[in-house]
Image (cartoon, rainbow, N blue to C red; front, side):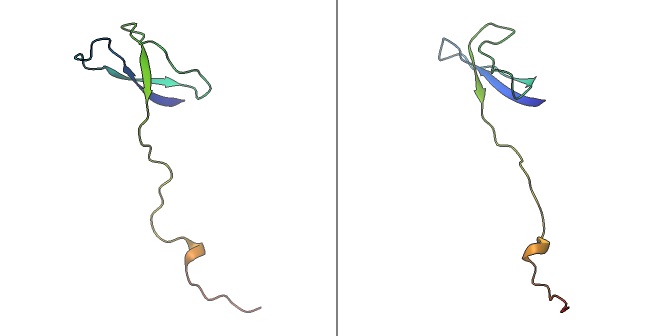
Length: 68
């Protein structure tokens, strides 16, 4: 299951939005309202870690190959 961050959309622009996390399947539809307050919400896009590799790949190394 993925963890999604949602943010409320307050009617008053002076009110700070509330952020919360929800674990959902990727196939589940996004939430439309906050389960606690009933206010409309939007999904917040955040940067993920993705696939991070460190070091040099064996394919990019200049390695002498043996002759057969």
